[in-house]
Amino acid sequence: MSQESLAPAWLARTTLSPPVRQGDLIPRPALLAALADANAVHSLTLVSALAGYGKTTLLAQYMAACASESAAGRFSILPTGSQAAIAKRVAWLSLDEEDNDLTRFLAALVICCRRLVPDCDDLAWPAQIGDRSGVMEAMRPAMAVLINAIAATSCPLTLILDDLHLIVEPAIYVTMDYLLARAPPHLHLIIGTRRDPPLALARLRARGQLAELRTAEPRFTADEAWQFLNDRLGLGLSADDLATLYARTEGWPAGLRLLAGSLDPLHEPVHGAAWRD
Image (cartoon, rainbow, N blue to C red):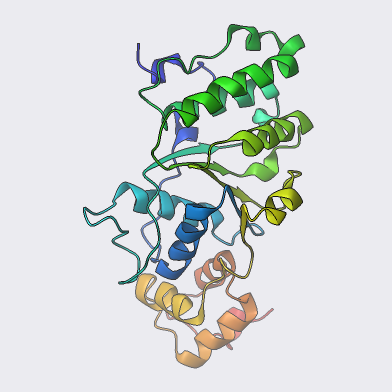
């Protein structure tokens, strides 16, 4: 029986893969290098920014970069000379409001982690976890099975949890703290969120196990904004118009896309009627 066939019927397989990327995305090698370097040496990398700053896009690009690792052992899309480490195995889990149930969350987490340790036959879902009345009592042995399976490998492993801000169930964060406190050093978590999760971040920070990429990092630089608007979208904006647009959005990717979408086919200047507040 395949590992995928062991997944519960309610688990949409699409949550185990990043969303399909749009064709107008631009490569962001410096940001990807920063994420790769952070992930290589920290137990947890927190990518925290408000909606529209491209967190999911960045994480999806990182996962794609890991999948396309060259024979030379480096990311083909990173700058020449970059020393960013490659995550050998990466698994993805998109979260939503329905995952605010410890039983459901644990099941999804185990199925996701089977992608990191596909040759581990004993990574089975403990039978007692199905009894919701005893789910907290069953959490520790279930997590111990998972942690031991991961510890039995030697390959660097990365687990990406996207949209963690949608999780509000305290028991789930207790479970994640349990995993972070006991995970082997070759397991790395990357979390995409709109706000800091109620995890033991201070403890991880004090131990040097936490990396943080916040709003300032996912913003487009002026050069990236030019590449996105003129090279990808073909708007033909002047330097002055682009500078005005960049100042208004402060590099907010979603804001740039929204304002760019309001331009008419003649590409009126930013200071024209099409750009009035």
